[in-house]
Image (cartoon, rainbow over all chains, first blue to last red; front, side):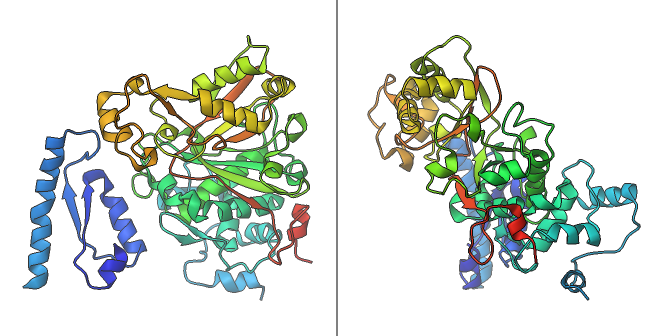
Length: 72
Length: 373
């Protein structure tokens, strides 16, 4: 992910709440501290398929915004 | 000016403070540089004494410690070894353990950052274990031995301070485990009826090694009744055959630790280590129906490790915990008593063994081989 970011591709990491610190630390470690982190509701494991779809629905517009900002 | 003094001048390499145990420990707690227990202040003098047992440049890393991928230089590791309470002669074992943990197949990132409670189990083989008076007998996984206690602790401190495996940031363990403070012992080679682990893995008997596992704490196997090898192995297989442990779902090998009395009975009945593994492969199995419907649908029927083996399987179909007949590590450890132990692992990790080796490539026969002339 960090490599893709460094090559200029639009990239983001999707995380659930408790993993924000880990995501930020990893982004710094791999030299992309500005890597966008898109939050979804925790947890992602142990939920129904409908709930998984709801998480995707949370992430999708955030990523669309990211792409939009990148191309405008 | 010594090399150490030069290195200590590098930004962030050291700091000056009052030489006072309480205030230094307070500072370390504030900075988050401890495992929560008091540490021995890593003064330049103490770090220098630790580095007496290091034959490589003190700024030359033995690996990168995940999840921060911090450079595991001898200088940094020595500071953590001092903090843990290591005697200087333990340092080559600490260095070798860290080198093993940083091997790609170990997956230290996963082991440290996961929500699973795994930790790093270190098993030491060869003459160095006796030289350092490591405990391989009664209570070997418990308290009471300086080498066992502090070598394991030094590794944990290095993962915290060099690797950034801090709770809630680089270490996302739901519970963690008391074994995360230290989990280190020597194999009880003298009491084993089989070849020691390092010999089984291809090393000469007089070579010393460290084997690292991304392990849970051990689950006891109590059997005071069985008087045959088959009986004892059946009990071990019953403990291995459990749902919820990662080894059922992944193909990383678990550790089967036999107390010397159990090992003697098993070997007396003609079982080699290979036979033991084959038995556990064949009998350490969980019926598909023991898992929840959701687990079956989402994991067993779909995960690549199972290669679609269970797509059409019914509830009686048995799932092997070991994914091949040789996919386990057999170790003899502990003192008297009718106990053995099953040590499940993170699963997405493979044990790694490294010999104690000088920088010039020579295998060490003693920790004194690492001393500078």
